[in-house]
Amino acid sequence: MSRITLRQLLDHAAENAYAVPAFNMSNMEQGLAIMAAADAAGAPVILQASRGARAYANDVVLAKLIDALVEIYPHIPVCMHLDHGNDLATCVTAIQHGFTSVMMDGSLREDGTTPADYAYNAAITRQVVDMAHAAGVSVEGELGVLGSLETGMGDQEDGHGATEKLSQAQLLTDPEEAERFVADTGVDALAVAMGTSHGAYKFTRKPDGDVLAMTVIEAIHKRLPNTHLVMHGSSSVPEELRREINAHGGDIKPTWGVPLEEIRRGIRHGVRKVNIDTDLRLAATSAIRRTLAGTPGEFDPRKYLKPAMEAVKVQCLQKFDAFGTAGQAERIREKPLSAMALAY
Image: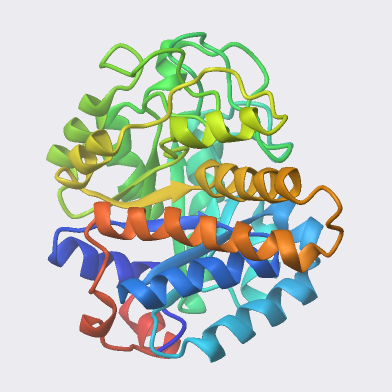
C-alpha cells in the first residue's frame, strides 16, 4: 500500500479507537529501524522529518530514502509528514519531495521562535490548507505554544520553539478557541498545547495535572469529537535508557517523560497522532555507547549502528503495542491522492 495521507490514516484510527506514533527520522538507520518495527507489528506508521532533519539529510537524499522504504515495505501504510513547518514555502517543498502530510505550525511566527497571535496563525494555516488539500495532502495545525507549565519557558528543538517565558494562556490551548480555529482553517489534525515539550527534559517529577494538563485534551475533544488531536513531545524517556547512557560515559540528568498511561488517556479522548523522537535518540545512543565501551577498538560504524537500530526497533514496537496500532496495517484500504483531493 505504501504512502497514505494523514487524514485517511487518522480517520481509520478514530474509527477503531487507536493512535499512530509519529517517529522523527533524519537518516537511513532510523528509517530502516522504524519500518522494520512497523513490519513486525503489522502497524501503519507516520514517518516525520523536521526542517532541521531535512537540512541535515538533504531533501533529495531524504526523498529517495522515503521511496526506498516504501518499496521495501509496500504492504505497510506510511504517512510521510513534515514536522513543524514554519511557512508556506517549507510546506510546498515538502509536498514536492513526496510528503503526504505537512504541519503548519502557525503558533510561532516565521522565524520559528516568536509566539504568534490567533489572526496570524489562522491565516497562514488556512493558506497552507488550501494549497495542500488541492494536492490531496493533509495538514496538521497547532494552537497554543509548546512549553513547560513548571517553568513557563518555551520549548526549543532543532532551532524551532519559543525562546521566551510564556503566559499560562499561551501554554494551554483554549478549547473554545480550538473549536473556532478548526472551523477557520479546515485542518485535518490539531496539535494541542498542554505542558508537553520536546527533548528529554520535560518534567522534574512524575507529571500530574499541574504540569501535564490532559484535561485540556478532554475539553477540546468534547467540543470537537470528530477532530483528530495530536500530542507533541510525548516520549516517555525510559529511566533504564538514561541509566545505561550514564553507565557508559554519558551525563543525562534525572528527568521524567510522558507516561504511557497518560497517552492512553489521551487516546480515549481523541488523540490519534503521538509524536516520538527523544526515546529513539536515547535508545540509539545507549546502544552505541554500550557497544563502544565493550569493544573500545571498534571503528566500523556498521558494528555499532546495527545494535542502535535494534534498540530503536524495540522502542517503536513498544509504542505500536501501547497505542493500539499493532495489527492495523492490513485493515486499511488504499485511497489514491487524487481521491483524497476530491474528498477534501
